[in-house]
Image (cartoon, rainbow, N blue to C red; front, side, top):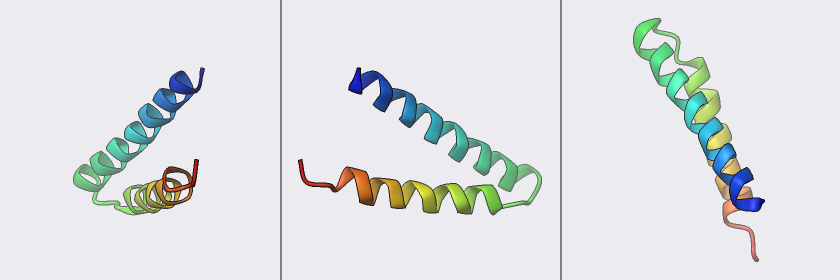
Length: 52
């Protein structure tokens, strides 16, 4: 179950980052990309680097 939830989380993060890249390239609005990149860095730093 944890693998399924982790996979869904990575898919969601990838989708939001991809949408942010698309909006930054097409519309010239980098705000979603900036916010999602910071959220991704914080999430990986907090959860990914936690002791097991």
